[in-house]
Length: 334
Image (cartoon, rainbow, N blue to C red; front, top):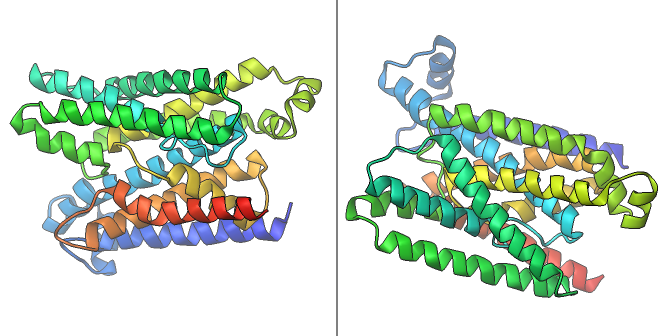
């Protein structure tokens, strides 16, 4: 391992994370100075106009972008380890779209019958959708040998799920269409402190469990025969890996909708900077990288064409798609 590269990556990501948190706090439809923001934070001012903006709107959104962005990047890395391919990701393989479809069904049913869905119900619905699509992808992977064909099949499954979701949204009640449409495009705007109290423990526990699998992940990267020789239970390991990845992507989709390319772009950039694929390094740095990526994209989505706000998924695609294209070209050249 190149320890200097790894240390540099940790330092750079830490600085960028801090800078982007401050910028997201200060910039928006109502801009404020750094002095105002720090005064509000340290005095816990929740009464004044700026105090309500910081504590009720911007802080939950900042924390959600950091946690869910990190979760998405780790989910992508787990899928890349599972399929042994750097192009695998929850959005590309259609897993996020499957989660979106089931959550949309639950939301339409709840809104039609005047039911308020608890945050955990949203996660469970998204988890069911994620697992359903993952099962389909695993069935396809047993029929095809080419990873490129599997990726194309995943994209097609994602398109089918997205089409059905749009059909549901189109025929939802008029009063609910706007909220459902905004969620289906991807956004951190609707996240509240109540949601954060659910997101934080779910993401924290899942990422810690993923980190605890670093040793068998490192073994599986060296080949299944080597992993078996050092005592890794391949079936149990793969089941755990896909479950953890599904929980992370389901949590993201339940609260922010589908977000594209973060799960592929962030791990690739981290791998390129650190020049290592060791899970013990990649998992924490992927989490930091995903947080930085989503905070930057959310900042631009809110302010680039203010007062109009772009969907977070559109912004992540603008930055993430070129990274994926460059990665494909680089692999072809090698």
